Image 1 (tube, one colour):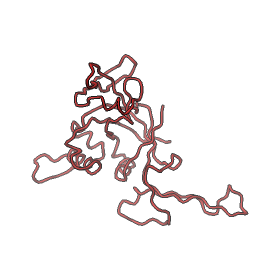
Image 2: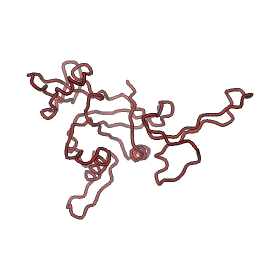
Image 3: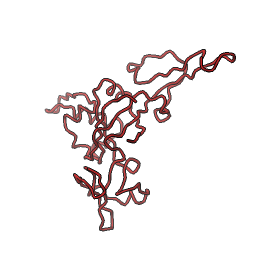
Image 4: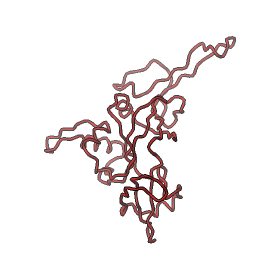
Length: 222
């Protein structure tokens, strides 16, 4: 079992805590993938032609149960196996926006008894812009140390998929809301997820339809 740091936004954190979000999609890229049996250099990764990639259900000759991606290499007659670094049984420790007040001690008091105890606030807990009782500034998720993480997720399954192949059930498991649009006859969680994705990755990111790792998880004790 491996532990991986993983950043989630405030709305996703609230969904996880409410048990409404049990799945996440991460774009397939060099930092979260293994090619054949190892990480690859930037030049090796860029030589892979993901437009011609396809899913292999597995298992592989090296013992990976699958499913995983088979990806041709440009200008060479070779096809390579691309796996996620995230595997079932691994755990994600969640990074989120936070503020932290370290403990303060009197100079003549035992260091085991702080004058002011340490306290941590999480931005996701202030959904409607409420203020919080501290002078400490909010800090970006990337700076959260593992010791302050309050959420641990156990990975139940991982598979590759094209982004826009998401089903209604999966879109709901992503924490998306059901969207109603007057000019579209079909109102769905898929439209809600499309809105979330575009807000995170920008205009055209949904139309790009990248390969993603679909990670299903459950919340567990650290």
